[in-house]
Image (cartoon, rainbow, N blue to C red; front, side):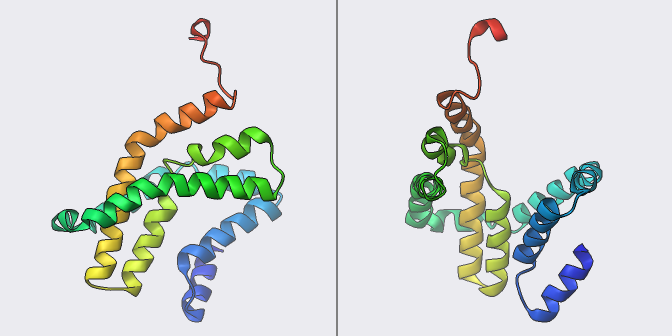
Length: 170
């Protein structure tokens, strides 16, 4: 299905990333044996993740770090508040539980794969300086958020009452 979906996406000149994400969501929600399918895939997906992030890192141009300047700073400072606001609005629209409205956005801090995937796609659409700058910004900020993100997730889970932090449990 993945290869068929990829071939159709290439033929129709649509995003491989988005079409395959849609395929995964469709299988997960519509196919009765999806847990078995994804369980089998989990046995060999870690090397694929490593390859994905290795290739993303290989596209990072170290000399672009200095040129990011204000763009990178703005992105780092606005990404998490934007996620928090968007998650709150989304939770509000679907009438989600109050703790989801308050803490989901904070728990999204370390999410990286889709951002890097979209940045790689963007680099293909905008070759040269613009695409490289966008990709470098996303990779650098991903590293920052992957370092600090787990702390934010822990805080969100504690505040939402989803984990117990009492010493006797350790």
